[in-house]
Image 1 (cartoon, helix red, strand yellow):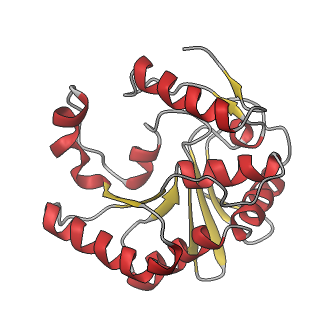
Image 2 (cartoon, rainbow, N blue to C red):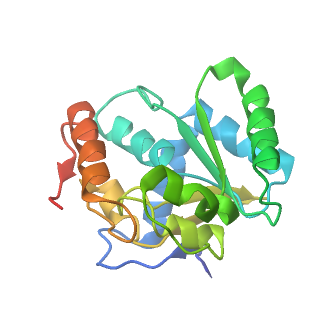
Length: 209
């Protein structure tokens, strides 16, 4: 983790050159998320609940950026909002309790929340997706395996700072490039997602599997 000159604490390990200085990319990302009232409400709720090692991420982050880059409203057409955390309590009951509390806090928005304790993903992954994965060691470890480099991004607030986890950097996200991250995702899932995204965001450049 590094701290830039603007007070942002940023976890970013780019695998290709950035298109702009890192602090400007983080500023742009945070500015985009501030345009999305749902994203802000999710992060406020997670912070108020004191969830361990939480991040708001995946589609809710990427699609907010892509909406604005297309001239759409920030929250337009976003299917659901992902909130992840990492807790030693890996019971399904506790995960459901947290999801229910978050849903109650955000009921005015009428959105779908996808809440996951990344410490327990390995317990159900094989049943849902047909292959076993090793337990994650942290929320950041989990984020690094999400299906595309552009959506491998998590954001949270800590006091007056913004924390960004972006294992592949922010360039693909901001340049609207969908690139497969083949750690665990299948070709079928990648292509289903990107076909759906391309229909919604025509300026998105989808790279083949």
